Image (cartoon, rainbow, N blue to C red):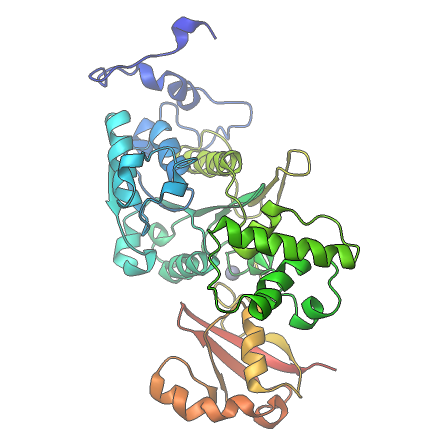
Length: 436
Ligand SMILES: [Zn+2]
């Protein structure tokens, strides 16, 4: 590219089209993979008129990409305020912005830099908004950092679909990152595999049983957890652990190293200690950039038909990226599940393996960890009776005595079990199968 090709646009030059030169080429000419039946050359208007909603942790990247891809009417939801630790990668924020709402600062920054784009911020939770609100958008791009929020928006969008109104179907483009790994997926609610169908792709990391920590550690992380949970409690009980205090981390690191040495386990480091204790997976700027770019690229293609997009029913809908074992991407079709509690057929109940000897309390705890459920505040009913209801204080008190009873005394094999969780509007339907 010759230097002269790079459009430098000082403030006030927004009247020119020069900034969009390369974008216009993509929109004006079909590429080798463009579907000739759906391609409309020069389709700028769809893009400019489309209202899109962005939300969450990948926000800076997504907002910048959407604005620079020709989207003009962007809404953004984020509940967080700017922390000093965000400044290394969330490039729309400056030191002077610390403490202010991310959505507002980001919107103002991008509006100033990309003339003609309008960004409407909302500082709050996605759950504050209702169906009427979500109806106004052409599509929704999510870079949320929690699985709860993803499940919520997913079930909202699936619930909004009205078979008689094609406009009620809002494609959901979801991006997520964890360290060097990430994914971008496109969901056509009710038509293709939804976030709930794909829940087992986000299995929670299994907690290490206390007895492993206390007796036979196998990994360097076990030694760190031992220092964190057991040694600190025994030796420094009077001091409250402050994970931001280097002296405290150093103490844990030294304790963990000693224990690791006893058990011949290599690999305990200071930064691993910090990571385990603070339960952090570092956010990697390049992973965020790649995943956000993929999401916005899909949004652009989906609305303009300039090129085939991910997620069209019957085609690939899931792109995963791995940046720590070489730089690898893989794209596949994740299949819709007939018994999905959100988008599947209503009548279908999923088999749920339960230990008949376990107490209801143990069963409740296990629901948070099972990859296919991940319900932290479940209320449980069978067709016969309420086993444990957490949604209202009165019911909770009434059903609490059941927590000590064994599952075999509360339900029977083959019985239907209804589980709800106040975090989601979904009813999860299971059929009891005894674990043998
Ligand atoms: Zn589903």
